[in-house]
Amino acid sequence: MAEEKKTSKKAEKTEKSKAKKKSKKNPFKSIASFFKSVKSEGKKVVWAKGKDVLRNTIIVLVVVTIVGLCIYGVDTVLSLGMKGLKNLANTTTSVSQQVEESTSADTGEETTAETTAAEDTTQAAE
Image 1 (cartoon, rainbow, N blue to C red):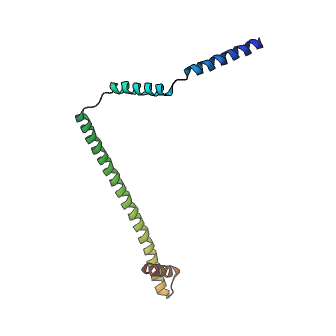
Image 2 (tube, rainbow, N blue to C red):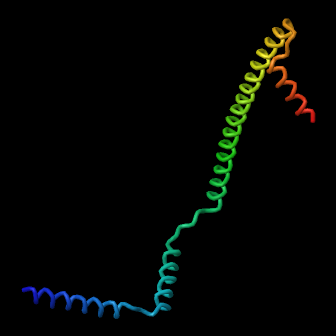
Image 3 (cartoon, rainbow, N blue to C red):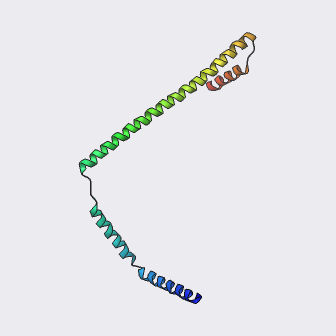
């Protein structure tokens, strides 16, 4: 029984190898048949009319323009919001610096915040 399985497997392998040898074709014939099938499929294609193509092109351009303007508007609003938040943060620190300045003016001492602010303005001027 084991011998029958071995022989049947060997027979199957030889049949497969023979089939592979027969299936090897001339590559030029394969390329030619490929282009023939491409040509036959190309004949089946239904091409759009010129008016339809023009109409669809205009629709696409209008939609792209509208979406681009929407994105531009959202981007502008968000960037203005971020600038506003940044300015708000700067004015908040300015108020705290003014409070420190008024308290240090009363005592006659220079605080580290004033020193840092003076150094920043000196560096910015350079």
